[in-house]
Image (cartoon, rainbow, N blue to C red; front, side, top):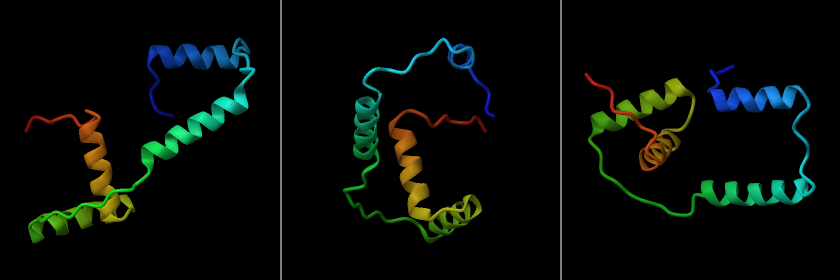
Length: 91
């Protein structure tokens, strides 16, 4: 299991101790969250970009190592960049 921050630990402890109660509108909330997730991850736009052959081969190799298509890897990296989740590592 990944490391939990203090807020996540608090939620887990509340769940395990039975302090959390089901929402009265649970089914409605699940449906709403599913719709939001679908809209968030819907891939409805296409782009074309030019890369060097070397970069493309490197992308394909990394994607193969991760066990995913290289287009999925590119999409994931772009998504993380947009969301501010990519951290620049000092060299």
